Image (cartoon, rainbow, N blue to C red; front, side, top):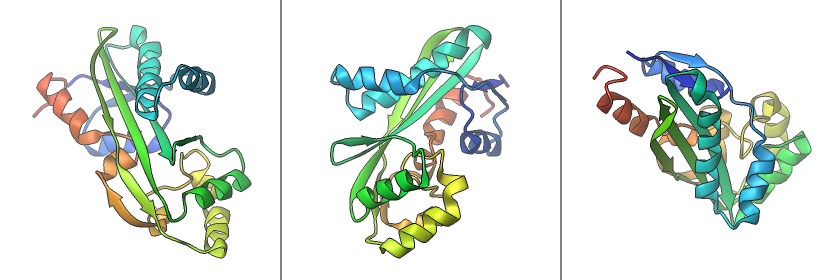
Length: 196
């Protein structure tokens, strides 16, 4: 089995891969995501393409240093607006308020590099509809969960209490968590990077 280098510091992605039996090495790629995202927006790129480009830049940054590298990114889009990770609990509250009662899309991208060349890419786009939760519930949720949601686009973790925010989910749970795992495992098996 080939060791997969994850160009991300995401603990949930690492956990998903380890739980699937994939041997990983973690090397977070340091790229200027905000400037790259703004540049792509200025060029007219949509959220699908932005997620894909950010994932590729992360993989590309680490690819010269490892034989098999996975870059990932996730963009949340609602009503034509792209959301970033919150800086403060107040930002999180404002984002959740903007998502309340609406359906949003998570563009979850993964790009695989082998021998410093891109060999596979995939963008999954699950749709999530948030319930009309009360202001008091949102405030209590952000206060209790801030340490867990501060690094999450959308300010929720579907694998925890954040699931209570939703009335409908379309798409697979792995992609909502930030990794199109089933599709990735398929290509890794096909390439014989993992047994199967």
